[in-house]
Length: 316
Ligand SMILES: [Fe+2]
Image (cartoon, rainbow, N blue to C red; front, side, top):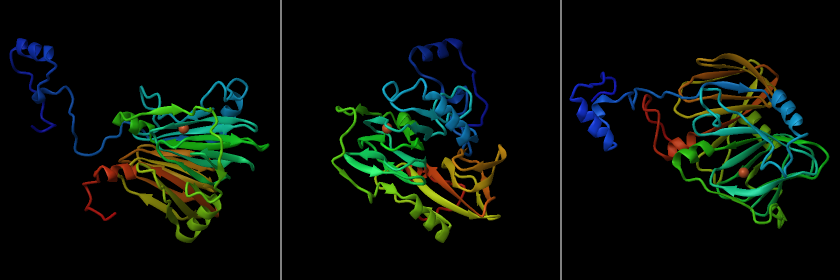
């Protein structure tokens, strides 16, 4: 039966009562359609401002400590009715603050995670599976599924970054696991300044200037893609509607972003915009040089075999 056919409720009332008692429902009389012609995002385009989130994190320091909270972070909750967590269908993002002399205790979980460092002094690090990885502004640091990870700031400057995780996807797939490290803070057995889990910001900036767009090697992150996008002043980047969900963060300069069904907004360093699936969008560079990080669930879509069937198939 076509999903757009009008429901057919004809039939003896006692028949439908019997069905309900057996936890059955007539497929020819669905209350709402369960398939539709093209993607419908439950989530909406939205923007979060780094300056506002940073001020709110600063305020939280007076009453939220690493002892009290697993992480001192502010989750970017998509502002759609009844949502309490996801930033978009499969991803969640959060601003996080680690003060000097603080550690964020070690744990591991099924969701994949990555961090985009916004501001940090020297001696800020994340420890992944016992390896100490220094981080600096502009870095992208990967924490694949079920890798121990904790964070510490031994310097004298507050460290701010954005966490991106595929928690909503893992929740939907119902394959969640989580475990605290038995030693609270996992000890570092060694340093890895050139860890493949760390993409240094300076290198990414150089690649973006040379190539315009760069796809990062995400190693063990099978669900999440990370790309760099560079724009000169006045340059534009346009994206037609797609099936994947995308989060964009400005790491340098400023851009004007237009999103279908949302409008136009200017974004500056640390600001985050979400373009849910099936929303076309575009960027225009407003500074001499602007650079964005794109975090996307596109690899999950591809891995599961889902593609935009409204376009001819393209190679991977
Ligand atoms: Fe974590």
